[in-house]
Amino acid sequence: MTAQPDADDAIFTDSVAEVAGPPFNPTEAAAAIVLGVLALLISGLFSILFSTLAEEHRLSAAGIGLSAMIEALVTTVVTGAAGIMLKPVRLRTIAAVAAAALTALDLATTAASGTGVLAIRGLAGAPEGILLWIAIGFISRTATPERWAALLFTGMGLSQLAVATGVSAFVLPRFGANGGFVVVAVSAALAIPLAPFLPTRLGAPGGEELSGAPPPRGWLALAGTLAMAAPLTAVTLYLVPLAQQAGLSVAVGRTAVSVSLACQMLGGVVATAIAGRVRYIAVFWVCAAAFAAAWTTYAFHAPAWLFIGLTGVAGLAAYVAAPFLLPMTVEADPSRRATMQSGTVQLLAAAFGPLLAALVVNDKNVHGVLVLGFALQAVGLAIATGLHRTAHAERRRA
Image (tube, rainbow, N blue to C red):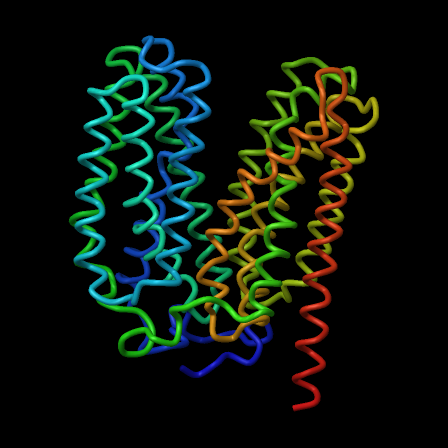
């Protein structure tokens, strides 16, 4: 494989150029991104689907969180393990089989309750992880992975918002949770006719160069990814109580959440536009300033318009920064083994952040999550800056 010397210093004329083999054609690129969107679709529906199961007395209140955690955890583990252990060959067959299995498991959920739901959704995480592995594999091998990651995030956000809105308005009131899982099953089944349009393999013949564990610098980049991504989920989780402790209403907190989601879509568009043109380290520092402004505001009695406005800025910054975590791992590990694990670590961060937050908040004061956010961001920025400077110094010596 020909290593890319500096992923974010060069602008490639072929936006689907592959660093480990022949370039992807536009159809293959589109199929890989859509596959990732379909694999992650249910993650935006966990709340409404599992809550509806609880309303139908098919799942306990604790089961809502357990089901979501188990499915997300299995997806994360399978995606990461596949990146280390599997060769990216015969991808069309693998995608078709995984999509068929996921469709069957989604349909099987309609007949489950209690621990059966937990078991089936845990099993569903495995084919979801395989489908996501294929999408991440494509993104990791492109010349500008941040551009394609931004497209994946934007498509994921738009599809989840659209499907969640449609299911809530038209499906759940009439057909209940089973109708929602049928919709999810139909979405998973769309990946079956999509499979023939995927690349047959990724990377050099056999894909040997991109399988295996990352080197030490790659693991350090992944640690930086975890440190920068985890606090974003943690702080967002506590937006409503933060608004209340700032003397604002619950409605203001919920409005801030909605504005943040809308601005995230804009952030994905911005990230797509600047990919390959702006250094990742500059993006990280600018976005960190946006997070700092929002989190500092949350700690005081700010007016509603400022609380909501800066929450929107933070949401935009989150979706601008996330795709640029990939070129950081490419620079740290040109073999791109670490890049193959970046998506997995970002999924892990979505669970790791709230877990740490639970240790630093209580019913009377949730401001500890802000301290946690600043601390983790500082660690992540220090790692990213150190990696970038050492890589730059090594290039100068070479």
